[in-house]
Image (cartoon, rainbow, N blue to C red; front, side, top):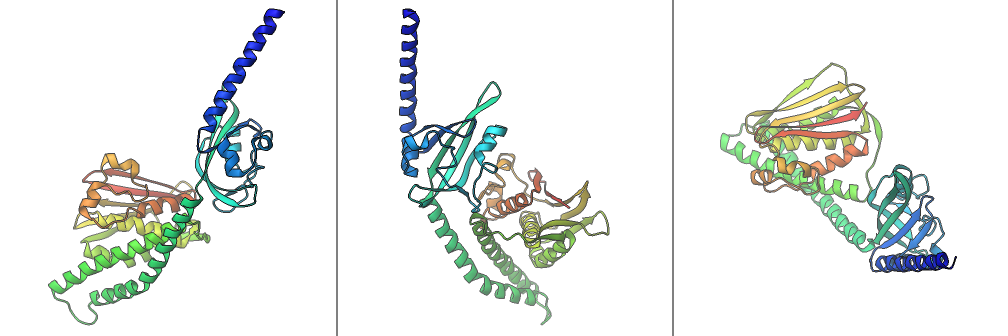
Length: 370
C-alpha cells in the first residue's frame, strides 16, 4: 500500500510539473488561447487571453467559451452555439482559420479579433478545441482608412472620366464626320487607356465594398442574356480597339434566369470579358457560351491569347496577383478583377473555375443556381 501511495504521489507531482510547463508555454505566446472541452467549457486559458478580455483566469475557467466574449461576426451577427466556429470544430471536426470576430472586453469596449479554432481529436473523436485569437483593431482601422480614401477618390474621379469616355465613344461612332485612319487609331488608344482607368476605379470601389461588407444583395431572377447584351454593348469599342470580336453561343432561344443581384452579375460578366479582351491575340474571337447544365446555368468566356502559366494558376483568384506574362503584355493592371469576380460568385454559392493552355487558350466558367 505504501508503495502504491508513493507511486501515486510521484505521478501527481509529474502531472503538476507537466501542467506548469504547458501553462508556462501558453503564457509565453502573445495571442489569446483557450483550451476547451467537447462541451465548449474553458479548461485552460493563457495570460494573453486574460489581458485582452480584462477577466481573470479564475473567472474564465469553467465558463462556456462564448460567454466572456459577447461575440459578433464581421457582418454584425451575434455568435451563438448554432453559428459558432467552435461548435463546427467540435461537431464536424472542421478547422476555422482567421475568422474575423468582434469581441467585448470586461469593460464593455469592443475590439476586432482574428480567431482560429482547431479541433482536438483522439481515436476519431473530438475531445475539445484550441481557440487562438488576437487583437486586430488597429489593422482594421488602417484597412478602413485606406478603403475610405479609395472610395472617396474613386467617386471623385468617376464622373469626369465617365464624361470623357462618353465623348470619345461618340466621336468614334463617326456621326459627326469620318475620321482618317491616324486619328481613329489615336482615339482608340485614348479610349483603351481611359477604359482601363475606369476599370481601376470600379475595382477599387468593389474591393472597398467587399472588405467593408457594404455589398448590396437585391436578389432577383435575372436573365444572363440580358446582362450579356448590355456588357457587350459597353465593351464594343474596347474590343474594337484591341482588334477582337465576339462569338456568342446560346443553346436555346429561351432566356436563362439565375437568382442573383443583377449589378453583381454584370460585374462578374464584365470582368471576365474584359480580361479575355485584354489578354487575347489580335484578330481572334472571344467565345461566350450560355447554356443549361442540369438544374443550373453555365456561363463561359474563352479567348485565344497568352494563357495562364501553370505555376501561376493556383494564385489566379488572389487579391492583387498578376501572372508575369500578364504584366509583360499590359503593365498597368490591378490584379483585382478576378479576385472580385471570385468573391461575388461565392456570395451566391456559385462555382467558378478555369482551364488554360499557356500561349493558346483560356476558358473561365461560372455555374449559377437557376
